[in-house]
Amino acid sequence: MESEIKKSADPELPLEVPEDGIFEAYANIVDADWSLTDVTLRFMLLAYGPREDGSTTKNRELIVLEKANITIPWWHTKVLANMLTNLIQSYEATNGELKEPKLTPRPELRTQR
Image 1 (spheres, rainbow, N blue to C red):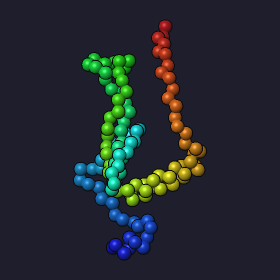
Image 2 (cartoon, one colour):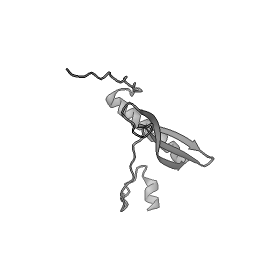
Image 3 (cartoon, rainbow, N blue to C red):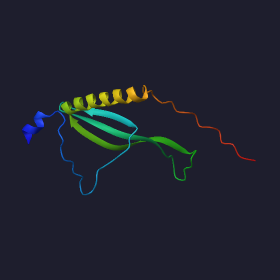
Image 4 (spheres, rainbow, N blue to C red):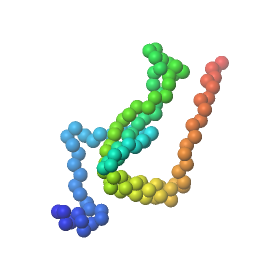
């Protein structure tokens, strides 16, 4: 089996789903920590949270919730960087350049009469 994997740059390997399912998380912030041997990608969610008990839609603050930390060796980090670069280039070739989004200001609420 090992020799078959070495022959192909993109081997077809069977996938198995654990009995308790696959962990999934959404993140809109990514940060990194590292050591001599590994890189830890920290996936976080920027969201509104309550400022105090009894908070409302106007009485809240932005918070960062840590969702997952994934640690991989440096070599896999380079493989991941290349994979993401190729994916972005392919996406932009189809859909145009990705640009950093800008947050629209909160509109004023108008009451109907």
